Every structure is written in C-alpha cells, then in structure tokens.
Length: 277
Image (cartoon, rainbow, N blue to C red):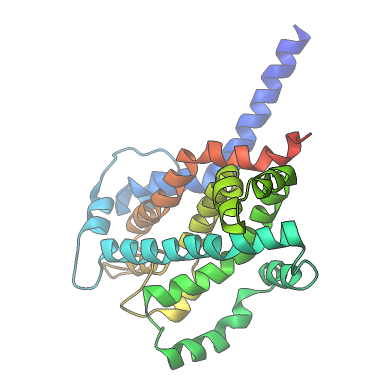
C-alpha cells in the first residue's frame, strides 16, 4: 500500500511539473482558438466557444502578409543550415577522430563559437553580406545558420565516429579499400543515427533563429520567425492576441512534427556511447 501511495504522489508531482513546464504552450494553444472578445473577457485556459477564425486570418494570403512565403523561406534556409554543417563536419570529425588533425586548434575554435553571443557578429556580417550581395536572400540566411550549427554538429559527429571501432577501418584497409571507401562504406552507415540527430537539431535551431532573420532580411527572404511578428497587429488597434497565438502555433508545427517523428533516432544516438563496451 505504501508503494501505491508513493507512486500516486510521484505521478502527481510529475503531472504538476509537466503542466508548469508546458503552461506557455497550453496557453498559446488555448488563445489560438478564442475570439478577441473571449480573450479579453476570459483569459484563462478554458475555451468556451472554439473558433478557427484566427487560423483563417493567418492562412489567408494578403498583399502585406503571406505565411506560405515565410514558411518557404524558413524551409530553404533551414535545409541549408542543417545539411551544410553535416557536409563540412563529417569529414572534419573523421580526420580529428582518426588522425588527430586539428584536435588542439580547429576543434576548440569551432566548438567555442557557440559560446560567443551571436550579436557580436551582427555588424561585420551585415557589412560583408551587403558587399557580396547576400542581404535578403535565403542562401545568405542559410549560410549563417550553417555556421551557427557547426559547433554542435562537429561535437556530435566526433563522438559518433569515436564510438566506431578503429578495427573496422583497419580491416577495410587490409582489404584494399581507400580512404573515401572506408569513410563512405564503413564509417558513414554506422553513424547514420548521429547524422540524423545532427540534422534534426540543426534544422530546429535554424528554424527557430530570429536574430539573423531580423537583421539580414527585409522583404525577399523573411523567415517564419520574423514574419510571424507581422501578424500581431495585422488588423490595427493593438495586438490581436488570438491571431498572434495562431501564427505562433503554425510557425511551431514543422520543428515540433520533425522532433516527434524522429525522437527515437535522437534518443538512440544520445545513448549510443553509454552502452559501448
């Protein structure tokens, strides 16, 4: 009986903690299905008269607001910002793990980039992009997002390659395989879970980036995070909280769906090193 009571209170504590942590999400979902009048009259979580009017406003294309355009820009920039770090960091991680190249210089420099406030790069990046013509382009935004994702990509891929037994490389080399065949046919398939994890984390990070989207785009490449703010006062007369909540929900769907669908790959990659040996 004591174990049952302990389990009951444990679940109560867990439920309260989960509710507290997810309260902003629940509150936003609730507001998205309320009218402006109900939000003013009853700002709590309960929805008395659910409505889809807020989503209709968000999904409607107007001369000033086009959520599909913002979603497209975010998708292009996020794909560049998540695929490019993998292309750059996988061979770099292999050389560091197997040959020790750059372990004392390149690796610390790249990883420590993530510890620096991104605002430091604002002025030089803007001036450089203005010079080379990358301002207000999805390519330019994607390139800087790739740089933001380089440290975590290199760190995760280096750990993944370290977990691959070197004996597999030596066996392939004895069979006459060259370095590219070893990397592509031996190491790469084993590291697929880690590559998937890097892609997911990088994609979510790139999708949620606001600073560089605000700083480097104006009209032609505005991402979803920046475009969502345009809806907050789309009808005039102050902030339309229902519309604001609806656009936040729509903007959050892509990374949330990807995270939920690929959760098993992330967890498998994260615990892989813990069971080694």
